[in-house]
Length: 464
Image (cartoon, rainbow, N blue to C red; front, side, top):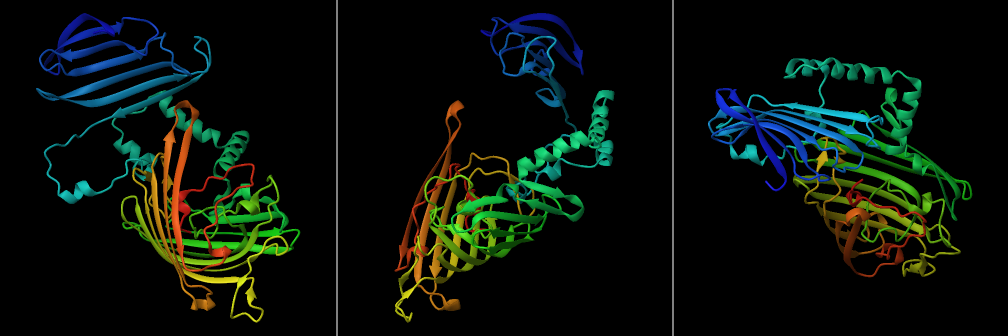
């Protein structure tokens, strides 16, 4: 009552229910309020119909008008259910009457409510993702059969407009450009292939000098049950080819059982991340940066092979078991040394590390929401925290591996919303290495000489 004024305008029977038509409008200007009218039942006080329009004086950025209309269906004396929900928005940079803008309309119709249908307990335990695009996107024949309210002339014309735009060369060029900038890949539909990532094409580091990289991945659709991805790179100073290749296969969609494996022979910088990663195709900061501060000469040659099995027994809780074999050596021996004391070497010193590791990884991401059911799913939110526990067992002698050791690592990441300033990502990492290992196998404190900060997706840890 402190916000609106009300006035009785009419009364009538609606669906055999006596209802009053009441007009309402705000008491004060410049508040985020509505004006309009509604029909309300005389005994249950349930709303039968209501329309709401944002007042002209309400200050909403880039919104000139909002109109909402809702209809409710009478089920019994005490239950009214939403039957139709209509919303219209007028978006504009200016609130002048003649200013240009964009209209947005949404109509939702509800029907076939069913109550008192007993279901087994397993039905309610199923994790049904309401954001799954496959539950929403259907062909035209489906909507012609199931649409509860026919499209009007303007709404039907939108489909014709979109189909026409796809044939306009200038629009297609703009669309393709935005798609490439957003995804980083150039789509080649007839080959079911994406070329990229375009942001990794050029790079520079002291070991390779100027560097070019060309990559590609299979892409039949966002719900592919398998995906192959690879790249080749060439350094103009060291005149050496580098490569990376990985494959992922979704064996069981229900438990999210994924087998993945790959190999990478390239140059990377130790200390990019404190928590160990087995990401075969992970981008190396040192290998792709064009602008850095200071000498970036602590670079390592790496030949990494990995195989892992990933499982998601509970929603947002993933388990990974796998093994890696890698060889490490300095890419710039005169500036950076990975030598260590080796009693088995004729000189007593070795400069190359050969190591086989067995890994067990647990990742819990409470509140994470995804869409899709393929081998790669897309996140629809970034407000969830991440807890990671990683156990690594190095085994000497396997594939001529050099060291026995154990490593335990824990990581906790939490995003914080700082009002209008943006989001702060805080991360706590703990770990310990049991056994004697050289520099190349230690958890080096992270450092970044790049002028641009690269944010690593926590989902990369332990997975290919």
